[in-house]
Structures are given as C-alpha cells and as structure tokens.
Length: 66
Image (tube, rainbow, N blue to C red; front, side, top):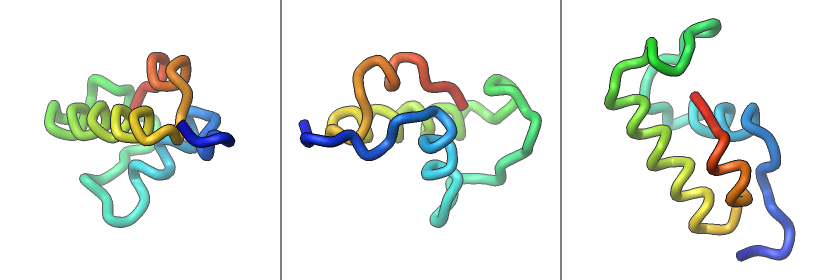
C-alpha cells in the first residue's frame, strides 16, 4: 500500500471512472441502479483495482457507489 492515498472521496473515484477513456456516458442525476449492469460491473472492477493498488482505503472501497 502506498504511503499516501491518492483518492480520498467518492466524487474523486467517480471523476476518474468517467474520465477519458470512458466506459460509457455519465448521466448527471442518475442513481447507481439506473445504469446498465455492464457499467455498474466496470465501476466495481475499477474500485477494486484502486483498492488493490493502494490508491484508496478499504473503508472508501466499501462505501463507494456510482
């Protein structure tokens, strides 16, 4: 795990997820379950990657939502 975590908020996780190259189109105001299942799974995989690489804490990984 890195000494300093790079991402500390859910908003930062979502900004990095939707940033280029994007996995889909972000719809402001949509709730997590309104996105197609493949986008939601990609987000879960992305959060898992950030956690395993030490960029986010376990607590943040457990509470992050799309």
